[in-house]
Length: 262
Length: 145
Ligand SMILES: Cc1cc2nc3c(=O)[nH]c(=O)nc-3n(C[C@H](O)[C@H](O)[C@H](O)COP(=O)(O)OP(=O)(O)OC[C@H]3O[C@@H](n4cnc5c(N)ncnc54)[C@H](O)[C@@H]3O)c2cc1C
Image 1: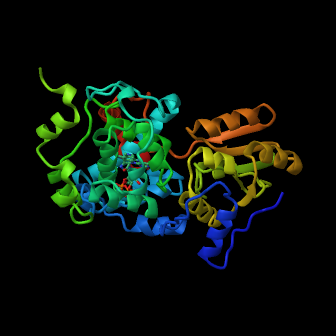
Image 2 (image 1 turned 180 degrees about the vertical axis):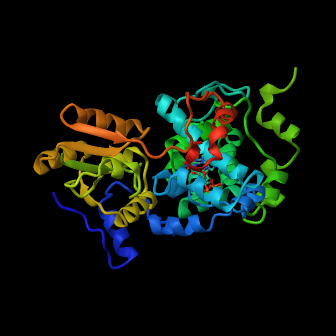
Image 3 (image 1 turned 90 degrees about the vertical axis):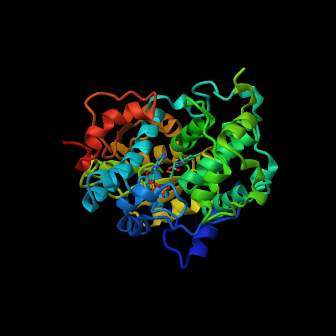
């Protein structure tokens, strides 16, 4: 049995080595995000839990980008929370610590009910049943060639960087499940294949939350919301994102016609 | 008692509790098993694999390529260790591997420091139910009074 090298002349050599160890992997993209504790510590030193509280929903908000490191326990939720406590106090950092709680929540469900990972926890609350949704991801989503410029932007970012802001994940997941009527499982598999932080629990249960199989109602959005929170980072004009136009009531009628009041 | 420290993808930190639990003087160098079949089952593409490999390069760990169970059993008998120590995980695939190993080998899975300590299990039906209980300690250092 041979020990594998842990020192390489440069990153390209490391990537070539990993490729050689991964004969079945066909995609070639490598993220600029570096693995390892040193990179994580640089991000940890830069967290701003106070700014996070009021800006986290915006794509250019003060989020940490620590998720790939948290995913593999390179940074623990405990030390992340302790670090936040050292930087601020009270209401200002509550939101930050509560968001950490989401990961803990999903991990606890995962531990208790691993068989929920790929199964609908509850029925859809969209007026449709599971069999109304397609099993596979449409090709234009896989390649980022949909009729929405914003979604194409997110798909490209997911595939190249392996990271998406939480709000972008919600938009793209909702687009896949509700606009394209594709099973959340197909979307979840697509995300897991690209996210550096891809986590069966956080990813699949969040998808179930968007789909409404683990929530009281489906999550969806309109163009106004997309423009407000993502407009500074993604192309969100009406002409290239027509399918999101209209009020929430208009969109609900279009997306969930069977839910309309009799 | 000699121990073999097995790092898997859910415990890639040198300050993980498993290291303090496994602090035996003659503990062998920690190992990680690069298991292509496992990573494929986890849907890992090149991006994730590079991220994991890079993370390993910063840890005191020997990387071996192979099937996780076979490699661990082989190392266990070749090194003549008494026990395998690893990190606790919710991942059913890793848990099944641990179960399989336990048929032949003593194995301890150590939990990392928790985010929040609770005296009884929380209600997990919705986040707000969990959070109502968790928030009592979540804003405290180390998640406990
Ligand atoms: C459809 C969908 C899929 C997702 N898939 C994943 C996934 O595979 N892996 C993953 O770690 N997260 C996932 N999330 C949750 C969340 O989007 C990411 O954790 C977050 O965007 C990571 O970016 P950050 O580190 O900058 O987060 P920050 O906002 O800076 O938060 C700090 C840390 O808290 C945790 N966290 C924050 N928000 C959440 C949340 N809502 N759920 C769970 N943990 C959270 C993460 O560990 C994160 O690193 C998903 C969300 C959605 C809607």
